[in-house]
Image (cartoon, rainbow, N blue to C red; front, side, top):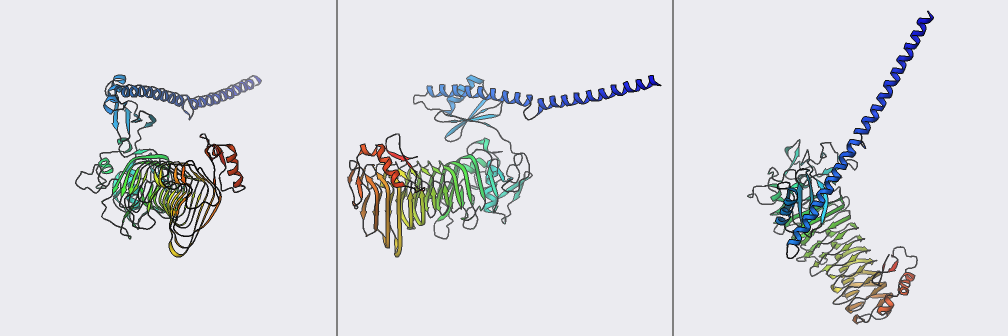
Length: 580
């Protein structure tokens, strides 16, 4: 019996050891499988390493082909045919494909399905993968087909130009959308009110890679030419082009659009011959977004390029009204009527951290406070931390704002472009404050503000220019060109300001009425000004040597005191005081 018991015990131990061994092997196998196939597994790491090697090789081939192509041209220009020829020599024929997409070329490496943007100046852009959207034209699903509800956590997604068109169609209540890849007529009761929408990748209206199918015709006539065959890419770059998101007086996007720091290039919108007028007898408001809601619409983190034209309020990002616009860049050329701006035509919103690099033109003005501005045609709210580099054209044109009304603030803004006035050309505002601003651009009227012009004998107006300066070449006045106020009273306060830009009058050129003017810590360089101007009391002379001395920075900062709204000064690389 004892012998049998020992045998059973040994068998039990052996079985237990076998089970433990199996468990250990399974664990090890699990670790091995995970190590091979997991998120950071060997297989994935190997694939990523292979991709990076391929990308490095493709970029090297491209850089060599670009240099050779530009060297062959007498003027160093990059041409499509030459670039394609050099790539064929490097990779073999039909291995690459070069397309002209406006300001750039796109080069596709056919075997790897990757493409690269190449600027016509020869600069090689980022690596991009061709994205196939499983549900093009359905913004309620992501590119993989997962459902979205338009909430902040699960915003509707723009993954291709078909999605962008459907976004516009839904907001405008016209045209079609797609569900399960089937055409569905838009329900005009749906406007995406309160919804969140996000741009998932860079789009280019002239690139076939930005469309799921650039040759499709099932969207119908969008560009206003029903006889052109309705091929989608053609619709987007001809005739009236893309239909703005929120077109008209009653349809507008009242949600949040996040550009996700992506770009939409080669936008083409042409409503110059639009037969529809708004309630004021001018054309409809036009931009990527036409019209918004001043209590709900937010647009952010977006860069655009292309051409936008209309005979109404026109802006690169939006034509008229929104709650907030932030971190947006306009590279498009803008032409509008009454009010035109690189970011917005008519601004009653908060605008922050925006930039304009495009030409902005206003072709005519019907309102007393119309105009063209690098950021806004007309401002009735606040513009902060914005820069203009574009040329601003029109009878009323400012580097940042054409004209202002109501209570307006322009804070920490810079003009580097050509305009009538550096910051604002016309004040029709009850109160306008220009703070922490400077102009380096060439202007006709003024480096800061062109004309202070009230319109009501019973109204009180106020203008504050503080902690600001001009170094730009100005035909008329360094700071204010003219004050011709029809008003009960106007108070003008200029403080902690200097002008050392070449001009006729150093600070204020002309006064037609009798404003109450306060001058404090204001300086001008007589060597670059033909005259002091209409106001001399309280304005101090300072020569070029003293302006560039560190002691002048101390004077400006000492006057700043504990005013935290005023930026602190420092000595710039050129010696002139500027902001930290």
